[in-house]
Amino acid sequence: MPDIRLLELRNTYKWGGGPDKTILLSAQRHDQARVSVVVGYIRDVRDREFRIAEQARSRGLNFYEIEERGKFDLRVLRAIRDLVIRHDINLIHAHDYKSDLFAYLIQRWMRPRRVALLSTAHAWVMLGLRGAFYRRLDLFLMKRFDALIAVSHATKEEMMSAGVPPAKINVIHNAIDTEVWARAQVSTDLREELGIAGAFPVIGYVGRIDPEKDLDTWLHAAVAATGQFPKARFVLAGEGRDGTTQAHLRRLAETLGVADRVIFSGYQSHLLPTYAAFDIFLFTSRREGLPNSILEAMAMGLPVVTTDVAGAKELVDHGQTGFVLPQGDVRGLAEAVTALVNDAELRSRMGECGRRRVEHSFSFTKRLRSVEDLYEKTLGLTPPKKEHPTHVGTHLKEPGVS
Image (tube, rainbow, N blue to C red; front, side):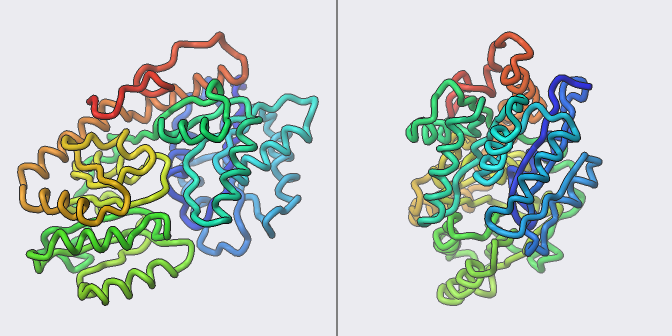
């Protein structure tokens, strides 16, 4: 049996998001001589659209779905403890405030048995008082973990400003499998299916349709940038926790007079044809860690226009692979989109540069080896190693260097 016996622990809803892509692919790709993996997901029993289980099982993962019947269901704690004992887990890797809380309680409950704790700070995206409370709770717990991963330098700065010890924080950027995420893998796109075969430009977005994504700004900027193009179309792929934000955006599209040009394509289980349908990827979020959808768009050769949110500028090299503008800057975002719409050579060049940047600096294989090294270090299995210069800690190349 490998020395690292890992429980990946996560709480999310419906289809998940970027973190879940990373968790499931990591579990599938780990070096089995180093790591044995169990994946556990805490699921609200009221969530009838939960899709993580089918994704995990299609990959052949050792997967457990832990049902939760309230905000703090002690049966969840017992179920996690049973998994730790059954699989002789010595490391829990948690991924959100709730799984961090349960992991922390498990570690204390099982003393003197040693179970190490590691958490990844993906982002604290929820807005409002409840979001602020969950963020404070999570940062309080993280101070008590053995090791932490921040998905961007911006996230690390946010953690340190809250008093998390810097020595515990390892910057390991999100990454992507560029063999899968490639134009060459696409035989068709969604344009025919969406009825936009002759459209130009197609401005696209992939992700949750929730308030923190500031899709009001997205729609205002996209419309302002394409006023001279009657065949412009605006595609938003994804869903929200509920339909409130999407209903609001539909009303806004009617107000702007573009309701017939805004397409909500819904949740897409296969995203390659979705990205292939876009001419430009526009991202206007206000709360992120390191957006996987930007990585995906860049890998697919799309120029990216994004707000300066968390780690976005660590991905997008402003003026080279796309444009990075202040949050809420409708005029600046629109001008950047307009520049790309009017210049086919610029779109092509930025798309190609973005693809090369992802291939060079955001390799999933290199990222996974860095994570495995951190697991060994956390468990005290090996002497401290030199960090990988392009993926871990402060040695990562500065944004803008490709």
